[in-house]
Amino acid sequence: MDAIKFIENDLSPISELPSFKTGDTITVYYKIKEGNKERTQHFQGVVLQRRNSGANETFTIRKMSGGIGVERIFPLASPFIEKIEVNKHGDVRRARIFYLRERTGKSARIKEKKFIKK
Amino acid sequence: MPGLIGKKIGMTSVYSAEGKNVPCTVIEAGPCVVTQVKKVDTDGYEAVQLSYGEKREKNTPKALQGHFKKAKTTPKRKVVEFQFDEEKNLGDVVTSELFEEGEFVDVVGTSKGKGFQGVVKRHGFAGVGDATHGQHNRLRAPGSLGAGSTPSKVMKGMKMAGRMGGDRVTQQNLEVVKVYSEKNLIVVKGSIPGAKGSFVLIQK
Image (cartoon, rainbow over all chains, first blue to last red; front, side, top):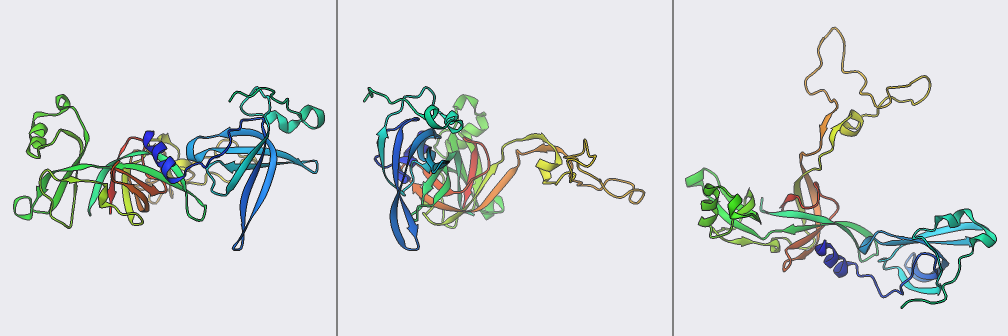
């Protein structure tokens, strides 16, 4: 197991990203390639889950776009992620908040965490 | 073929220069000790016997203890013959430096045992086509075993249900992504047969 960690640190290091949890609202700035041009796009939404570990870790973000729910999965170690901004720390009780998918309007709000342990 | 004995450590993924996610397997390759050199005059053929994996002396038969003592090494778990182009001497240590980044290797291992499996999983049969239209209990059935009165027997080697896995499997042409000679680790592209911790042979 340690050998795997060593290789992941060496070959696909996870760049400096702020710590974020399920329920947080974050903005992901990611590079996209068009032909040979590269530009940055961003995606803002609520983190539904973080899954797997090490080089395989991914996170799912959900946002409402014109009344339609849109979800995107990003690999944490992806070289295309430029930066991540944490906009809001959410107060949720579980690690995977899929119940959010069935909710709209007022009930889809997430309580904000007032005190964040550093 | 020159090669090494190793142990499967596990899988991970690595991002290539273009940002593509490449699934990779980590193998602990060697260090292997030369415990016997076979020559045409004495053994009838050329080979280099490599040994790998520590083993307690208490669990080693006396005959093997003597064999390892000749090469001035501790008892080893796995003993395999390889053919090397260059001359090897008794007691030499072969390490993962044998491999270079970018070259292609074959990995031989014992596949994971799957137990008693039906023909759909074991031989890739398609089963009976329909799940509906009156069909009720033949979905994953093997179908016909052959013609009737002639030959009035089932042909030898007919594919049927049975034990699956636990076979010697060779995965060919795996690219060596990285070699860590100081840690005896190599990273190859793609998957290799067997469970984590199982012995594998890595051949050039």
